[in-house]
Image 1 (cartoon, rainbow, N blue to C red):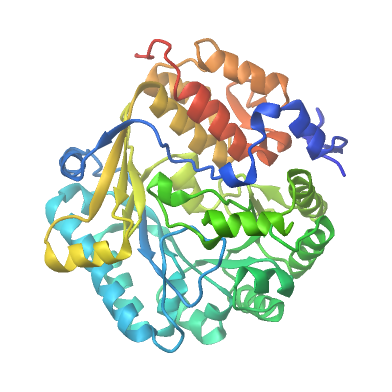
Image 2 (cartoon, helix red, strand yellow; image 1 turned 45 degrees about the vertical axis):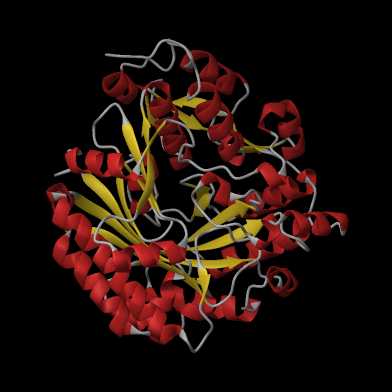
Length: 489
């Protein structure tokens, strides 16, 4: 088992074990039930819904690039590890729910458009319908077509806008994809998680490995880029089974394979999700006592096996955790959605229960927006009030803003331009504290490297392997919570 570092000649050296990498970086060891890394910040000054709405109204977003997101909180089954905002809608009973949610999402968007002129003037470069299981909408074109038409008629979509929708294998049959292509979708996200039927049965996913392969073949036939989401650290997985899964996917020629470690922390406590079945303390303790969860060494051995296969087949991560074949995307081989969200940290306009976004622009401080997470309360609010279904906001300034921006940029796995931080924040990342010592340590530990003739920083492959831990420890905690004097131009 070997870790991955980039040699001076650009070749990949397979020398160090990922377990030893963690041993050398004990500050980055995060237990399974505390592991819920998110690039959004849990710090900053909290704003009430009324304060956030006022800030939204004065935001200078017109003419700036943005990402537009709609959240459909419906699933035909509830995965036991899932802690996103969703509710069960049994198969065969989707139509009333799909009609309701298509109407609600359009109505929420209209309320914002009616209040804030800048929204229709922001330059939307990427559009994403997520969930839940967003592709349930493809079952009923009469519900997804109005939502797509609303976005096209009311927002300034760029000529080459990336149009995304995500779903599970059963949602990407040929007739579903014909509907999607007819509506202009040009990129897809497929949730597989594992090609082991034993794993999917235990997690209560309702599809087989054969259905997953069929969906992948259907997506390949479209000629559009797509990613297949895979997890590691799940019960019944082994390093060998993860390697086998990766070999199957790369042999099929999947354009992008995303790999995620099991997150078993409670997102409900963070205000950005629901409690998963496995978050329930009694259930979690039972699974632990039964020895269902792999230990930390085994979990990282799984990732190591996945990465070795991906590198052997010519894949490279961009953003971190998203491994793509060469020339899948332009401009750094990174999806446009990821460029907007992470590389450039553009404004993200987000609608739906539990949806969270951010307002960035060219300002030194950022606003995070958080919608009502309780689905019933969201529906009730939308049906009984004419306001905005906001829950709260966060204002990020000073080191919290810089740390958050660094976390997003690090996640993109693209060069982090040093001059950009000088121009925007007056922050010299290599000379001023708390940045200088943090990056000196990351450089010394081989987790970042200087690129572009010393004008930018970029994660190494070791840094990519631990990118979420690095974002949490170095950027959110060490930089974001620093009490050093705030940088100002």
